[in-house]
Length: 549
Image (tube, rainbow, N blue to C red):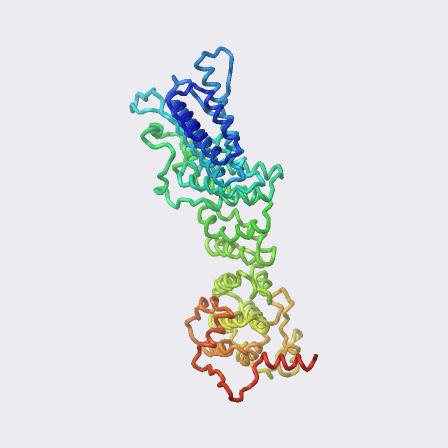
């Protein structure tokens, strides 16, 4: 069977008029044998690619363009054969589209690769220069035409399906290295996603497949990097340069073409890239896809957009959602605030609200504190605001894991270094008499949870009275069971220094690494065998449990 397919393919490559052989290949592509199906896919790719190369000029009648209209009236024998081949080409595309959803991964990969190769061949056939030459420059003229219709058929079949198409998507991704292929794919995907959004007919599988392709797109950063095209300059040279338009209308037309239609323009690439992502973000994103989008949006999307401020609504909605989504949205908001001067009301209040005891157990805890340290690095912040964050971190350290305690102490130290007016939180005596809201002295009592004037449930940072309190919680850490935590309080002795503490080493700590440090410390002494020693914590618990039972 395999030899039969190869022989049919060789005959078709020498004679383009035997349409019956193409029908036989199409029938064999429906076989239950995956190897036969894969071989038939290869034959269809080779045959149709060869037939598409025969469209060398207006005199040729063998046109296989899938979106050409067919009129059967008054056709010659050659034209009827061309119409027959065109119909078989459309049937072959339908068959390859179905094979992209095949349960066999090798068949999926072969079908997707064959369709992309046919898109390339059809684009080359459409973009060949005409025989008529320009009288002015004596250069062949052509009008670049990408096979958008065929590409759309491929994408619609690939995206809007519930089947597992990971292998087929990976085959399409390989062709994204071609600049004009990537440009047309973004334009086509933008139209498909916009139609889905307007019709409210998108599915979670459709959204996930769209994100799989968009995530794989590597955008060029400069126009000089746009050098790879399906049609080379020799076979399809650009249109002859025209004289510079004197009217403003001509200049505006050239500018519109540059922004929207020229695949060799970096501005046009960014335009279609931005449009595609904005259309994608208007779709109802499942939580799993939303998390992956927020993980990549600040590195792979925003730097390539013409106007990243268009993402303000999306990022602020994600920031207001709470939980891990809010933590991930901080990356994009940081770029908008830092580089695009976004004025976000109540930003610090919401950042303050995210500091909950569960934060230290989140997967993205290190990323959050890294960004929070940047947001609080300005020396122009109000003293009451800085004091609120320092007090919140101090309170969280009471229930935080050992690694979280180290982060809290390091961040508090940096806050006090940047804002000397908040050092009173450390140096305030526990017997100091404070004023209440009416200006009267409060009774002098030892500072504790009950007597602390700090209001942790107050959302307004100016009313939580953190600046009237003190960081008595850090005193409790002096007796922490992990030596690294109790020793970290020595950092507070350097609050008068100008140099800030590098937070990165503290963000990399974990419970295991801290315990390993304790075991490897020189001060650690293991009890000797046969020598009396203090019962371990585990032994004490076992004894208490035995007494209870």
